[in-house]
Image (cartoon, rainbow, N blue to C red; front, side, top):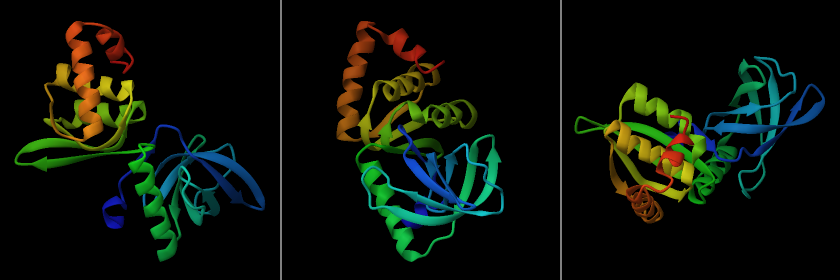
Length: 206
């Protein structure tokens, strides 16, 4: 599981906080996304590419993770950092991600080619935080089918994204988790009645 997630970006509907130690100072930031190899964090602290910062964080009740990370990129107040970590921290990070996905606080979107069809696989929470990756896959990569079997929580913005995929891009919904199936059937009933469908689609910005 660790190797599968090494380069997958795990996004959050509500970014967890991270305590940052750098140059003798301590500040806080928010984690935009995380993988087994590093994270993207937003902070007003003046970090420098190539230098190491201490990062201390917990993902939605996980044990506290304290790991050094090398700053590798910057766009405004958004910094990319690569973990410098050993086996114990790697296990702790993987366990924390697993927990966050299981409770729907984190999300993964990945693309797969299966039998000549492009399948978008969704795991964890289906919510508005997935919008950019979701719409990029739909409009730039192309999607034939959505695999929703790994979804553990759904909100209206996430359902609206799937409605856009279904009605505007001809995408089919394949495997489904129990929680997604229940929410999706309810959404289809609402869409069939014409109530709030346009409003729901408009919330996705399309």
